[in-house]
Length: 111
Length: 351
Image (cartoon, rainbow over all chains, first blue to last red):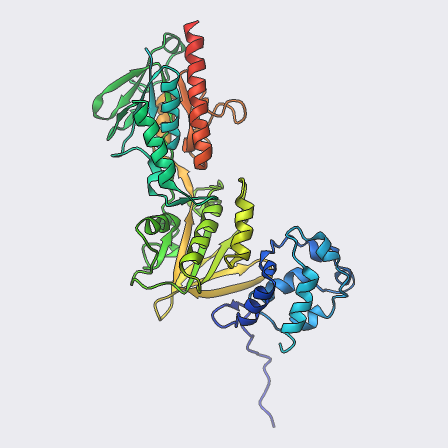
């Protein structure tokens, strides 16, 4: 006879904790592509995204999370990208967004 | 009478006085502190060009000196009129104007330029940020002072490994009765973040902002350089609170609104980007001349477009941050403009 399950669980903390997150990979990505840090969160990339029109892929959000050291799922998310490059055409800061996708896929496969 | 009283010896007042003298008038700068220069005396380098504040200040002081402008230091203007009532148009048309000085003295003049500036927001009113409670919480004004004194350091003299700037402290905040945007704090915090990077090459530097308002020439470019070259991390969210950690650091909480999740981190140094609030004398100037105040407490110009240095009171003109938060450049421009308006006003009276 197992313990009675009352349905209570312990939720994982939702806060992004910059004291615990390992910012090393994010710094490496920024070192290889400094413009990665120049995002002003306009959302142009996400608005024009071919993949985002069909799935819940949000490039702007995922790359922001990567810059905060939140890598879980980033690689899987980036696989939704079809590398069409429209995001790069609209970026007002001239970020090679397509290159960022490729860099994240190369660096963050382990997360 | 050729005398024009310039209230306040900051950038706007000094510029106005020099221009008035050049136009053949006799300006008198009335300054309550012990020296000319206003808040510019407390700044280190000016955004966005990192021009030393000292250079601009020395230029202005030299111009005032060369023009032999009369300066009354340690003197405060108690009211814009001798009896505290609005000057009648008849008096103004007769070219008569007098202000009430501290110590019961009166000073007569043909016109008055109010260049009394702003006050720095008192960050300790935002108690949740711990200013004057925790040792390593500073304001952007403190950082300018530390830079002027030769170095930024924590209270124990060590170098910070992680610094966070909080934008909009005392701006855009009903809780402290400062609903307006002070507009210069964003670029000041970005400039100081870059100065921190130069001082501490290995430190983590974060700026927490609600909106980044880079309105001036070269400001947006400075922001991009801060992101890319100075590796400053910008996080969109207002810090809600600061609390001490067991090891004497400061933990801050905010929402990272761009990803919709709460965020927390501990820092060695917290810098509060304090805003500009209405100068403490705006209220008495408005009251004694029956002039209008803006809802945020600054003096209200007669017209935001074609009359931004006009007060609506005959013979009284405004320049600089007495009417709204302004940059040094804008204050200097208004100083010159107010002088032009005084000259035109006195010419009209003479006709």
